[in-house]
Length: 154
Image (tube, helix red, strand yellow):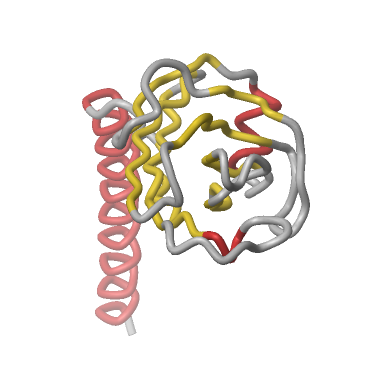
């Protein structure tokens, strides 16, 4: 009986030491790894097509927008081809779910030739709406002034 108690006490003590050691390792390794690595940015790949427009159109154009949230900065690279003509304007619109239209939040500046690149500072509310899928990328042409290809950022 004494041998059993001794063995049980030793097992409990060893388990407690092992558990405490593991807890300390986890907290120290997670805090050191969070200090060593910067917070990851949010990269979204957005397919652009005419069927996503509201209303849809018959354009054969297509594209992809890569949208990155880096702190309070949104960066984009938009590539496209097969459009009905030159892109006359490009924007990020919102807030609106897929199937609904909204106003321009971030206009693209400079050349509208593919690839379109740029960045803008956004607010915390705009970041939240973007992460919630309430913003969309829209490219416009003379033949489709309301938008030729579109894709929801999510």
